[in-house]
Image 1 (cartoon, one colour):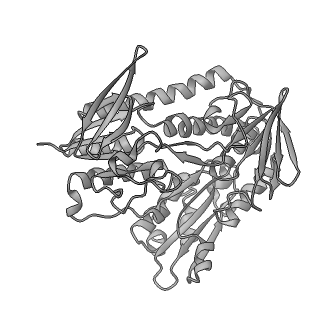
Image 2 (cartoon, rainbow, N blue to C red):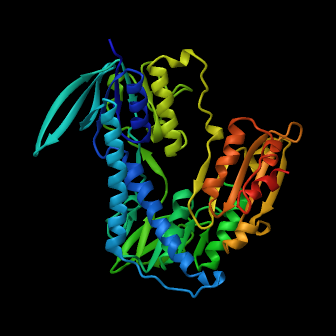
Image 3 (spheres, rainbow, N blue to C red):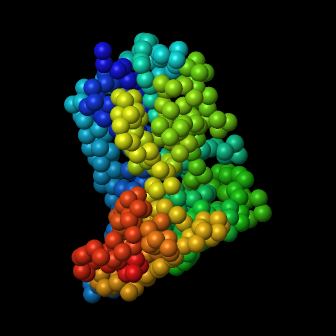
Length: 457
């Protein structure tokens, strides 16, 4: 008899686990209450990156004089941009659904809650009528994702006080906007809105943007923001946001305040673990609602797994997808063979600002804090012919290696196409390659990747 594998949530973790498990012979049922493909993915990540790409095109058009062309000032076509965003979302969502169905996965639209450790009740609403059904399983994956965090001192109205998920695209493009939160999501919104011509203020609770990143990396981004006229309120924490006519007023705990046409909350997310009746299955979440897992993504109940944002690990689609694959392999018994556990410390990540930022593996500050000896080499893109050809020489490549063995331990890239270039360093980190492996690779010339080889020398 086939393994009955139930998946709650159809985001990157859920749909990857479903397709892999189905190929391996499992009887897979997926319950999704929102959108197949994942709400955080299709309603947040993809739309934001689409708008960032459009904003980047606008920014580039303003620098055409540096490439021997006359500058142009493009205008925003809100309807066309909306159609573009919706088209990409629909295309990706349909592709995911078709892939699942082609693998024989049963998709149920509804909300699931545990009834026992081996069953769930699914509530389905059709034509205004709610029906329930019980589904029994041998193994279950909880992959319900997350949603934007809303503090108790503000109430978003979806018009001028917005969560990140309410900005794609805004009903009107703001003339001015205050972004609260200087992490990854916050700085991406600063870049996006400033690219569209808005006057942007960023509330920074620490003394640098991206407090968890390399200070050199943060400094390059801060300089670019300041050149674009972005105001940085450092050492300030927002304590209230109120509407005053057509303005919003953001008041900070140090007495400073910001007036703008819109405010955007980018202060993290909370897991979608409420409403699952986890206690009925014996699953115990932590105090913040995240579902703790081991290296196999197993919860405290041996046949119930968790993956994606709800697991409290790195909130990246790439990580969620790999978790889903590992869960499918474990459910189907493939972990009894040679099995590489997921190493979250080796996950590459990127920030889609301008310039782009990407990193992987050991960070320089982390190494120094722990007293570990490292070799750090850095090459600016201004020394790379392709960067000059592109008229964009901002940023650098930094590679961190072991001075005794030459093994690549990590790296950071700031600059054009950093999200693509980091893949080379990520591969080196994952495969324990040495800097000489990069140096001796015959790379393309002229190309930005040449900076990788130079940094590895």
